[in-house]
Image 1: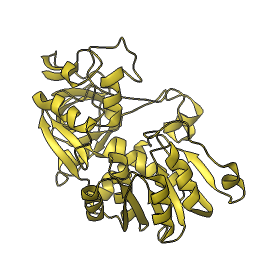
Image 2 (image 1 turned 180 degrees about the vertical axis):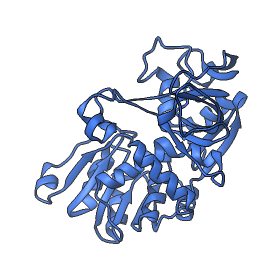
Image 3 (image 1 turned 90 degrees about the vertical axis):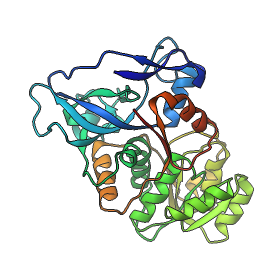
Image 4 (image 1 turned 120 degrees about the horizontal axis):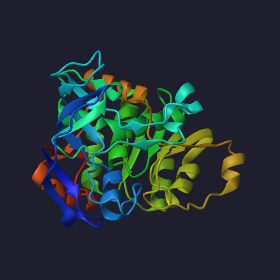
Length: 336
């Protein structure tokens, strides 16, 4: 089979399409013919510096978000058949700790993500597959695991309820777009921001109720408060935007944070936390149950994940260049 290989870490020029052995499914596994693999900032961090896997791990095949068709079934597998349309839950857990036993599994001390998706075939534990209706395009399905699992778990962590007004700063990225779509699906109102006027227009098409074209913290604070305080904030930016989120949050509101795109050392006024009874919750990825929920929402037409572009396997380097330059709206998908 062919795979897009990171021959070294540094940038897209180091990506080569190489021939690799086609994997055979072991006991409890199935082989999936990869029809679509969406890219994430996680993949980009690996490509540029080996973040999370080690600088000596090259050559490396990344690709977390995989959707495809079951091609072969290993020994002992039940409930999965050749020809099934599936998406992989990329969670890798120990299966023994308290979080694995009692949930949620994304708190496992050994939590990590499966890769190898930028290839024609990948073997997956059968119990990590979520079935897809054939009516759901595989490109769209491949965008669901990382971005939508993460956003859905943040919606839960921030205790968002129908009718709530929720601020999503920097909403044009994959997690932000997912958050806007999910807020609409659960009946909440979103205030979404982007520095791009064009992307703000696109945010309105995926469910944003209010859009703010700015990345200036002071402008954002003023624009959001013009419509009143918000009930919750979904923050993947960090940096100065965490304080902005607290500034626009109502008394007793919640802020969920999942990333540090704008900086990992925000300065926060502590009185904003205790005098206003704010709750701040960290959130990482989600559970397989969360993925099943977002698949169901997409299958029912309540969620329409936008695909920002599709690339052949030999165009993977171009896909990463576009991802790094933030040229797209919605996830970029490689079609092996």
